[in-house]
Amino acid sequence: MLRLFNSLSRKIEDFEPINSPVVKMYSCGPTVYQFAHIGNFRAFVTSDILHRVLKWDGYEVKFVMNITDVGHMTNDQEGGGDSGEDKIEETAMKEGKTAWEVAEFYTEAFLKDSEALNLEKPDVLAKATDHIQEQIEMIKKLEEKGYTYETSDGVYFDTKKFKSYGEMSSLDEIKEAGHDYSRVEFNGEKRSPRDFALWKFSEPHLGRVMTSSSIQPATPEVISGKRQMEWESPWGVGFPGWHIECSAMSLKYLTNAFGNKGNVVIKKDGNYTIDIHTGGVDHKEIHHPNEVAQSEGATGRKFVNYWVHTAFMMVSGQKMSKSLGNTYTLYDLEKEWDADRDGFEALSLRYLYLQTHYRQEMNFTFSALEAAGSALNRIYREVAKWGEPGEVKCDELEEKFSMAINDDLNMPKALSVVWELVKSDYSKDVKAATIFKMDEVLGLRLREGSLAIANEKQVIPNEVRRLVKERTEMRKMRKFNAADKLRKEIGELGYEIEDNEKGTKVRKK
Image (cartoon, rainbow, N blue to C red; front, side, top):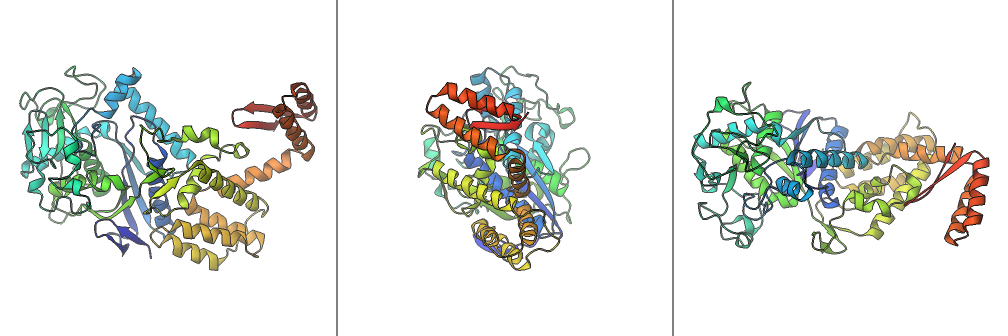
C-alpha cells in the first residue's frame, strides 16, 4: 500500500482514493514568463514519480497540470499574490514582445525541458487564459456566499470569513501580523493583509459593467489600453488573480463542478474533492491555502485529501536567487554534461533528483551532477551488456523496489535496490527484465540509453575510436596538421567527425 506524507495532517498516511481504482491528481505547473529552473523541475519530477508510482500500483490516474499564463504577480509570495506587476506583462516589456508571445515561447520551452527530463504528459495541460469564464463563474459563486469584497483595484477574498484559513501553513507569514507582509507595501483598502485578489482591475474601478452572459472569450486584443491580457467581467475590465485559476481548473477537470454553461453547480450529494494535489513547499504557505479557501468556499466540500510538497533546492549551500546568479536552467547545464550520451544528458539531473528524498532539502553542485551522470552512464553500460530481457523477472528485488517507492516515494532506497540488482548474480535476461520494469517508475530511459551505447559499440570500430582519441590529443597539443591527417584517415574508413562545444562526435557517413 502506498503511504504518503500529507502536508495537511503533517503525518504519513495510507493512501486511499475516493473512487478506487481512479485517482484524481492535480499539480501546480509553471508560470511561463521565464525558463523553469532546476529547483522548479525538482517539484515537477516529484509529481512525475508519484504519477508513475500510482500507475505501478494499478491505479487509473487522471492527471491535470496548469500553465499560469496570466495573473501571477511579482510579489506573489509576499502578501497574497496581488501586488507588484504581472510577471508575463513585465517580461513582455523587457523582451519587446507581446505577453501572448512570451507565454507561448516559455510554454514551449517548458514542454521541451519536460520531455528531456522524461516527464510523462498530464492528461490535461490547462492554460489559465483558456479558462477565464470558469474563473469568473467561481468568483461569482464566492460573491454569492459572502466571501468577497471590492476595492478600487480589484475583488478580494475575505479570509476572516473562512475560519479554517491557513491550517496547512506552518509559517508565521500566513498570520495577520506575519513578518513577510511587512516587506511589501500594504494595500490599505484590504480588510486584512491575508486577503488576496480574485480579480484585478486593469484601470480604476468604474463599477459593474457586464453581465455573466456577455463575458468575452480570451483574445490577444487590448480592451482598455492598460494591459495586453485583460477581459471584460461583471466587475469591470481586468484579469484573474493567480490563485483562482488552480481552483477553477482542478474542479473543472477532476470533479465536474461546472455545468454545461460553465456555471458552478453545487449539489448536496456532489463530490468535489480531489485525491492528491502536488507542488513546491513554497506553495504550502500562501498559494495552496488560498486554493483551499476558494474551492471549499465555493463548493462547501473538502478540496483535497492529500497534499504532497517537494522541499527546496539549495545551490552550493546557498538559496537560489537571481542576485547570486545560481537559478540554473537546463540550458545553463548543457555545457557541463558528458558528450558521450547525446540525447540523454538531462537524465543525469533526473538521477540526481532521485538521490535525495523529495521532503528533504537538496543541495545542487556541479560535482554532484557530474557524479550522477557517471553513475547513470555506468548503469547504461552495464545494461548494454545484458542483451534482450527475458520473460521472468527477479520477484525478490522487484518487491523490495516496490516497498521503497510506496514508502512515501523513497527513491534513494529504490536506487539502492537498482544497484543491488546491477551487482547481483542473476542471469542477464532476468536482470534486464527487472530493471526495465523498475524504469517504469525511475523514468531514466534505461532501455534507450543502453541500446544507444550497444549500437555505438557495434557501429564504430575500435580502430576508428583509437584514431578519434589520438586526434583529440593532437588538438589539445595544438598540433592541428597532425589532427587534420587523422581526420582524413577516419574519413577514408567511412566515418566523419563533428566538433562542437560539448566535444567530438563521430558517425558513419
